Length: 89
Image (tube, rainbow, N blue to C red; front, side, top):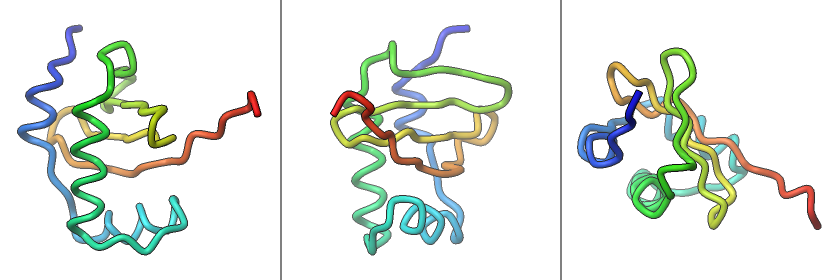
């Protein structure tokens, strides 16, 4: 299956509770706008090889920001964002 990055950038959306979930998982206190900017820029700059579809979700890894974004492939809702831990330190 081909993953269309431009469609994900255009259609992704958020639920009210996802902002709290993202702040909790990233241990941050970002505003809604800061979270939206982080996610948009992370998706935009991620190489297509960092996009993966497993089951009903897209997983987008961004090593610059050390995050992995989970997006529902049917609704394009952001489900969560997880930290990526670099084991090569």
